[in-house]
Length: 125
Image 1 (tube, helix red, strand yellow):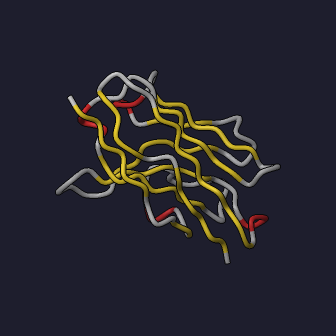
Image 2 (spheres, rainbow, N blue to C red):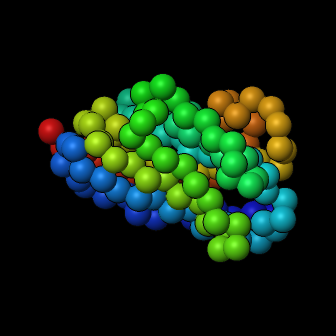
């Protein structure tokens, strides 16, 4: 089994920055693609970004391109999401996710086998 724990959420003003971390433990050798999803208040969970095992291939939803950067350090079993130029519409619970697969529909929550508990990000206007 794999355990994922997010940290780094909080309250920030619009235009500010936050860096989320996702620490993996357990059978980390079973992790390939990892990603970030978010769930805004009153809405469903949506894809934010994903990265291949090496970190060399990344994917972003259009609304965060140019503002968010996903990365991972496999020596530390940790994935990051650097969020810059934050907007009120980025307010959500952010979840990290891990998949046992290295190819597929990275944008779909069903592609991922493991999930963290979520961390709240609130952006004030």
